[in-house]
Image 1 (cartoon, helix red, strand yellow):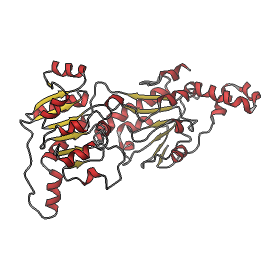
Image 2 (cartoon, rainbow, N blue to C red):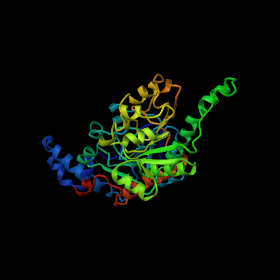
Image 3 (cartoon, one colour):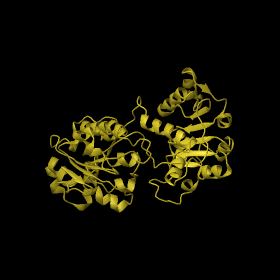
Image 4 (cartoon, rainbow, N blue to C red):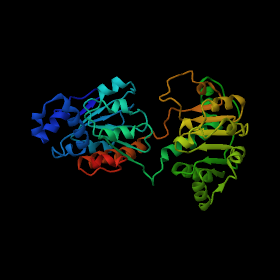
Length: 381
C-alpha cells in the first residue's frame, strides 16, 4: 500500500497491546504506577517485537521526497507489501512531524533534510527503525538508543558520490565562464557580456582528500590543472602516496590556488575551519567552490570576503539554513556567485544507488539481522 503525501492508517496494535500479547500475565498488573516500567520494558524489547508476526508488513514513512522520485525507481519494488507513506513537502515543526509520524514503524530519511531530535523521538512510540545513508549529524543517536530505535546508516566507504563530484566540476565551469550570466544576457537580447577564464594550467586546491575530494582531484588532472592538496596529516600522506602535491601549510594553500574546492565532513573540529583570514589570502581572481557543508566556513565570512574582492568568485551548493527560501539571502544577490539549491547528490542514478541500500537496511531489519547499525546497544536490550 502506498499513501501519497498523507498520513496512513493507524497501527492495529499499540505498544501496550503488543507487550501484553507477549506477556498476558501483565494484564493483572493494570496499576498506572507500573505502566512506566512496562513502557520501558517495551522500548528495550522493540527490536524483538518486529519479528513476532513473522515479517508482517510495516508502516514505512519517507520524508522530503520533493519530486516524488523514489517510487519511480527500480529499488522501490523492495518495499512491496509494506504500507508506505511518502511526503513531498518539508516540515520541521515538532507537532506537525509528530502527527505525521505517529504510526510510523520505519522512517526513511533523505540525507539531512529533516532534523530528528529527542523531543520528536520521545513522541514516536511506534518507531522502531530509522534507515538512511551517510553521515547523521541531524539525528540524536543517544535519544534513539534510549527509546530502542535502531539507526541504520551505511557509510559507503568505497563509493564516492560521483554526482556531487560532477556538480562540483560543473559549478567551476559555470562560475569561471559565467554561464548563468551569459545565458540570462542572451535571453534578454544581449550578445556576450564579458570574457571568462580557462581551467587548464591553473592550480586546483582540494581541501579534504576523502572520496569526493579524490575524485575531483582526478578531474583536475584530466583538465590539465596542477592539483594541490590540504587535509589532515593522514590524508596528506595518502595524497602524496598517490602522486599529488601537498601544500606546505594552510596559509600557503589558500595563497597558491586559483580554484579551491571544499571536501570535508562537518563535525566539531571542521566547523568554521575556513576563516576570514584564510579567504583574505586568496587571489582576487580565485574561485571558491563549496558543495560540502556551509558551516565549514566561518559564519558571514564568505559574503564579507566576496564583497571585499578576495576571492573574486564563488560557487555554492550548500547553505547555513536549508531549505533556503529567503530570496534576499546575500549570496543570491552577489553578481560574482553561482548558487544551486543543494543538488550535489540529487540525480536519478545517485538516488537509485543510495536508496537501494537504504531499503536493503529495512529488509535486513525485518529479517532479524539489521545491518549498518550505528547504535548496536539497542540490539543488546
